[in-house]
Amino acid sequence: MNRRPASWHAATVVGTRAETPTARRIELDVPTWPGNDAGSHLDVRLTAPDGYQASRSYSIASSGEGTRVTLAVDEVPDGEVSPFLVHELREGDRIEVHGPLGAFFVWMPSTDPAPVQLIAGGSGIVPLFAMASAHARSSDPAPFRLLSSVRSETDMFFRDELADLARRDDRLDVEVVYTRSAPPGSSVTPGRLTAERLRAAVVPAEQSPRVFVCGPTPFVEAVAGWLIEQGHAPARVRTERFGGSG
Ligand SMILES: Cc1cc2nc3c(=O)[nH]c(=O)nc-3n(C[C@H](O)[C@H](O)[C@H](O)COP(=O)(O)OP(=O)(O)OC[C@H]3O[C@@H](n4cnc5c(N)ncnc54)[C@H](O)[C@@H]3O)c2cc1C
Image (cartoon, rainbow, N blue to C red; front, side):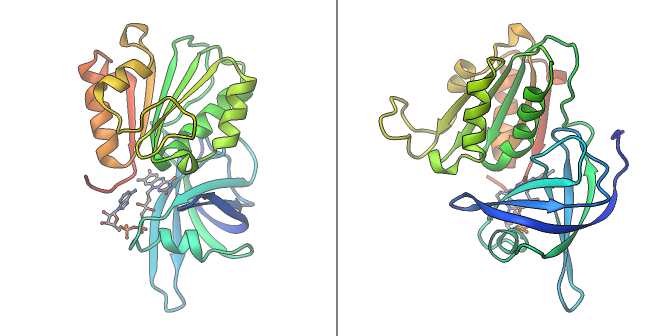
């Protein structure tokens, strides 16, 4: 059960900006929003002038109380909804949102000292950024480690905020795997995440971390499979699939 009741809300776009070369950050004002836990998502519903409606799920990059809700949407070329959100949505536009949704893929501060491992593929970092930010604002003692897989440095969502969080908070470690090109001067070889790279980068199974994995469906399925093979308890591994096929 989500701690907060989900319902439909009218939302006004109060800001948008480029997040990566293919993604846009969207700031919404939702006066009736009940707040949301870190990691939850909502459904966006768009209605065309002829009454045609389309809705899609988007993770919420923000969390806690308050009526400002932040989304970050990556364009799926030829998609129905994401190109509109990335290219057409303007400040002042009104959309409908249903939420907050998702009680399973959320992180809340506790006194559990077990480490938390976050693993993101591309835009899958959105709910994990909400978790890392909520953790930084809390006195939760658990160490957090974030592993993010992106094509290149400019494809990293919330890059500056994450660098800043990691600099200010020694409970957070951030590691990035670049699949196409590594930053200039980097000694890391670009390449897709493999079982061995994963094993070397994440909190070892012996430390019983709680793990949250999010991203495109093929990424999440590969990573979750490797984690289980590497001895992580299935009950400690939570996943959120964004769709797409491999
Ligand atoms: C719980 C949840 C949270 C999500 N959060 C986010 C988020 O924070 N940011 C974000 O950008 N997206 C997120 N998504 C994905 C989002 O809901 C849409 O699926 C995505 O924006 C594509 O919608 P579309 O209408 O543009 O494409 P569609 O018209 O639905 O699909 C076009 C084609 O793209 C494929 N496709 C659909 N989704 C993806 C995908 N994610 N990756 C690759 N191919 C895909 C489809 O199979 C289809 O072939 C989330 C999905 C879920 C289920």
